[in-house]
Image 1 (cartoon, rainbow, N blue to C red):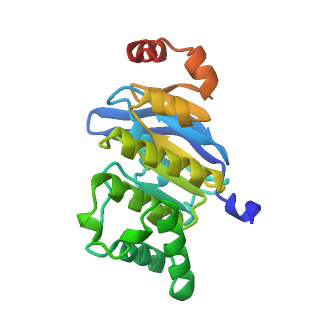
Image 2 (cartoon, helix red, strand yellow; image 1 turned 90 degrees about the vertical axis):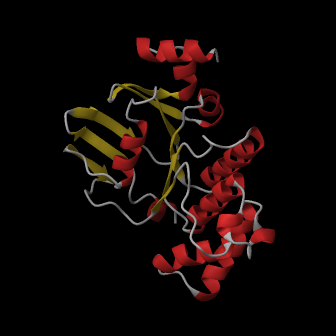
Length: 239
């Protein structure tokens, strides 16, 4: 099972460039995302964090360069993404998971088992019949994580999933991310919250002006960042 789960890893970006009009969003990015780690993409506003996440996930094609999954140019199905403001279908909480599972070919008793397990893991089993769009912001984010978790992804991409949440909801989401990772899913996440990255990350990709200035273990990054841009950002946050 472990080998099958890792067939799309590592993810390797080679000489990736993304341009939009006259603006360069990513410039000659080389980065490797290994299996098992929680890789956090950090950087100031406008540095290209979300763009890099979307390129790695396959939502956005690079202007130049390539992204390889396990040595192949095709993106495998064993991945999921959760956004800062997740899209909730006009269905119940359970119905949102059921729809996602059906798209992945999982139906019937197996789908219901996964729905019950995933909702239980995020503490929403008691709200399974509630309309998803009637849930609070924190509950919707937990439901989005449950929807992704039910697919048993090899890689889970998270784009600032706690940016609009209060501290209590943020802690709940962080706990869920830890649990998903502990079950064997590789995590790739953007955040503007440096303290959060310090709590959760195994490694840091630091972007500035669309370029990777550091890719290093998290402990080393927060203790002794190499680039002036990272030093400035960390000093401003007073971690």
